[in-house]
Length: 591
Ligand SMILES: Cc1cc2nc3c(=O)[nH]c(=O)nc-3n(C[C@H](O)[C@H](O)[C@H](O)COP(=O)(O)O)c2cc1C
Image (cartoon, rainbow, N blue to C red; front, side, top):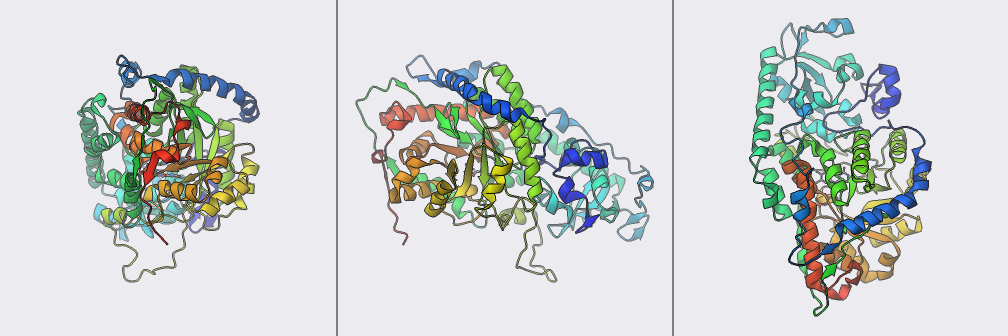
């Protein structure tokens, strides 16, 4: 059953549980990404809904008691982290997963499985050189090496549950050590048509490639271990610097990348600087209370972790670091549809943390509409069964991104080479659907009944109005960290503009923003214009990359201290006391 040269993949990959029956495969995951397919058991949903009110009450008490900040000389808001016995840098020495090394046995008799082993780049009994593999490093011509075998994944990557980007970014390379720890044996052999197998690489070259990979892993591990103690990190940018001091250029690029010229990414940072704060004085602010609810869940702070893919690229424990850090600090984690651990593992970690802490952490799940809606059905079922508290539907990614810096870094020849047809470009990545529209909400609601839905990636006031009209719980004003439409207005500027036009709209709907926020007082600026909370994406990727779970905790503590201090200096004890007249902004004339 071939579809575009891909056997059984587009449906089965996202439906691992059902496919297992077909292929006798255990959980299927692809590359550093994770599938989000359904593996959780049946009807926890109803009981969860029934229990929700009670849980929220308990969690509210927890968040309230835990993070109330009494600021006097004897209390340092960073104290908790220093004494946190579990705050060690998990996985800093490399997890079991990353420590596994490949055993490449090119003598393995592939013929038993119907594979030809004597075919090598057209030459009988020859080997494919790594130089030859490196020439196939493009989306429309992508080869990878796994355990000495060369595969053409040009069609396959389009159907990869974790998105094609992670494969394309690694095309032309030996990906054994990225691939192997998170995929069952023979995943590619079992799921690709035989013609995708191109041959074998010279065992010496494969071994060299493996050695180089292992040396790189060692370098990263040593560099991470040599970082200054996490307590010396005083701002989120310092955590980024720490991570970037040792991460490979590819990972730095992946986390930092913007679309095209990075205009929107840069604007995200400067947007906050167009405003100045006008504090109130002579008010008793001995005690401040920065707690709120985020996506309907009690939160210690008016910030949350924006869903961002592939945390594993920065640290072997990836999203699990974020679960632990968010749970221990009482903030909400947004889990990306392209997270690098499968949702069931993330949910298991959450359950463990809930048990350890005796409370229920806030976790919301982000989805993209897939062109193959069956993938969404599986995904939503797992999400609902897993008991996440809300859905974030990201709608600014109806087509894939265009990250020139990433393509350049890869040394890709680009689609402009002679003989390769330029546009119109048909996007085939499964997690983007150019046809998505408001009617699709019916579909989402059908498979995620009762879950509040927040639309992420909204900029225009009319779309906020439409979201309200369609009964959505809220909107996240965002330009995706500047990774989608370059030139798109920043989340903070959208908030200001919408507030000026229709303040009531913001009062009647939960509005969040994200993009470029790195300081506590910037969060307060957004709250003054009616935002319920602010999402931070990259800071948590960097924090966990540098220091694992402890970095996540540190990032939260940094923001906690900054928010609490800024509240005191602004003369407010409750977030609701922040008002637009306490922020003054440059008024651009755009029309
Ligand atoms: C590496 C990376 C991966 C991301 N992956 C996703 C994703 O899978 N889904 C999504 O809705 N947003 C994703 N985002 C966007 C973030 O949710 C958020 O909108 C953005 O990072 C906010 O900007 P900031 O990084 O300046 O805080 C990603 C951002 C980055 C940097």
